[in-house]
Amino acid sequence: MAARALMIQGTGSSVGKSLLVAGLCRALTKRGLIVRPFKPQNMSNNAAVTPDGGEIGRAQALQARACGVPPAVDMNPILLKPQSEIGSQIVVQGKVWGQARAREYQQIKPQLMLSVLESFGRLKQAADFVLVEGAGSASEVNLRAGDIANMGFARAADVPVVIAGDIDRGGVIAQIVGTHAVLAPEDRALVAGFIVNRMRGDLSLFADGMEFIAARTGWAPLGLVPHFAGAHRLPAEDAMDLAETARRPAGGDGGRLRIAVPVLPRIANFDDLDPLRLEPGVELIMVERGGALPVCDLVILPGSKATIADLAALRAAGWDIDIAAHVRRGGRVLGLCGGYQMLGRRLADPDGAEGPAGAVEGLGILEIETVLAGDKTLEAVTGTGPGGATFAGYEMHIGRTTGADCARPLVELSDGRRDGAISADGRVMGTYVHGLFAGDAQRAAWLAGFGARAQGASYEGQLEETLDALAAHLEQHMDVDALLALAR
Image (cartoon, rainbow, N blue to C red; front, side):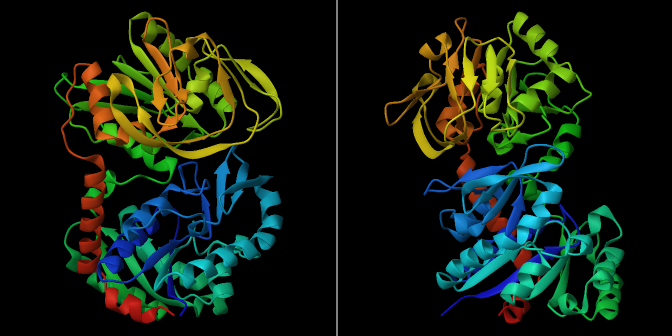
């Protein structure tokens, strides 16, 4: 029998939809249900590789983990990966489908609905319950025609909707009541209830607010959810979430390993950094444009969805000068995927794979050259890195890198391949492998190389504990039984 389904839509972006779905996935799984996450359309450069060689949004991979199952392309059939301010790469059921500017995409969406419903149908056949996550705001009525991410999907699949608002950003009453006001009657009829998320302080102070929203909308109040303190331990989906990390004051006693990361406009797969950020002995400094890279032990250049464009942005921010000074002082540099490509002498995109065709000079601190051409590599990998420590990660890139420094690879893969490069003096290095630091042994080896010590806690274990805590948090503050009863 096909699964029941329920959709969590939001009053806006970053109101906590992904976290709510992840927590509910774990809560319902712990109740003994076979649960699957689903997001019809996602926009994120933080992606994950599935076992069958596809890619989906990182949030859906986390939600799959909450369900205790591997990620699958059907969990996020449409993934938009921004390459510019107005255009994105389109990934359909795990594979690159094409590129489009925002206005062009509005014309393409209706034909993608077939893939969305196909994937949703397959998930329903394999589960008891499918938790669906909307995208952005449910009230974007200007984009309602042809919508596949929110009410357009809900109506096509006949899935009831719960609206989530974020009280922490202010105006949550207007958020939810306003959403009710602008929805078309047919869409409004799909909404069964609402959740107010991220409440801080005394919950009783908003009891009247919950009653007011319920009276104005006719929607059932399903939960007033306090801020979940452990949220920072879970991978973020949106690069906008990095801004909070970047603004955190540099703490510590001066004895910690200092790592600086320039936040590139099209930064990708930035959850590579999470295991380092959670280490007490590490001060991870996310540097936004307009700020200089601080004096530090290590500069990490992260992945990028538009490597040549982000290299230009790096230079415009003056970070190339900061990196050169850092290297002259004897500091170390690590490039991950797109960041690795930037470190070389030359970077070419002859076919316009990531933007306008052309070639540029790289930072010139590794003796390598990269050509962005050929099929995209999407695969899980295992191997050993510096110090012989093991890791399990993945590759997600286009392009081939060659050069003298490749004779000194950074990692040895289990299938016999060698990946990455190290400069002759050993201070500049790069690799295509993502997830390197999630392995406890590999992370400890890296920290030991800088004279620092890992806390000894399992990163994967921390993720599991946090998902369990999130599930318990939602069970306490939401009417989960009512949510189950509303699904169909």
